[in-house]
Each structure stands twice: as structure tokens, then as C-alpha cells.
Length: 160
Image (cartoon, rainbow, N blue to C red; front, side, top):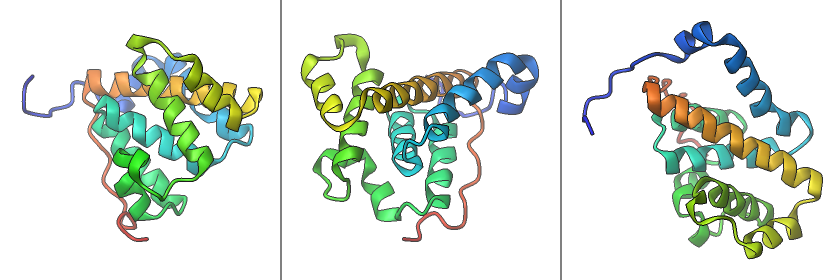
């Protein structure tokens, strides 16, 4: 892999080349929050999946979004090790586990992981969470493929 990071195309360029695809992804990305799923939990999920997929654009984007929503910096710093951190509640843990299962999908999704997610989320909530995971995985693939330049980090990042 080449060590330099020069954008092959920026997000604005993608929007201009494929406006219908961009609009569809934006709509899918917003569906869960628009239907009432917790925005803070969704940002944690989007950030974690972006970390796993190595999408620097999406990591920067969702760190900024999480900060704007008031998610504490210590929580953001512990996200990569969420399983061992005490900062995450039951719903966040279930959402992160489900999101990781759907992102690292080569081995399938076990009945146990599905049952765990269903024990915390209603059918509707799980469908919306799943759609959010699908959307961020799609965005990550765009960001990685085109090497979108990461956004500048907000001044509030790092403040609790």
C-alpha cells in the first residue's frame, strides 16, 4: 500500500459525479436518527465502524459529529477498546457489538450475537440500527476507495 495520502476524488466531486447515489446514501444514513434512534449512540457506531474500516475521512467526520453532540472525549478515546471500557451503557455495547458483527461479516453473524442485539433493541430499532451500519460501511468504502481528505478536527474535540 502506498504511504502517501492524496485524494483520488473528494466527496464534493463524488456528489457531482453521482448525485443520486450520494442522496440515497445520505437518506439511508439519516433514517435511523430521523426515526428516533439515539443520535449519540449512532455516532459511536459510525465512528467505531470507520475505525475498523480505516476510513480517515469518516473517522474525522464522526469524531467532529460526536463532539458536537456532547459525547465526552474520554468516551471517544476509549471507543477502540469499548469491550473493556466502563464508559459504555448496555444499549451502546449491544449496538457496537451488532455493528462490528455486520462489518466483519466474513464468518457470518451468529445466533448469539443476534439474540444479544434483540434482547436490547426492538425489531424496528434493530432494523434501523442495521440500516445505519449498512450506510456507514458504504460511506467507508467510498472514502477509502477515493481517499477523501479528512475534515479538519473541530476545536471542541478533546474537551470533555
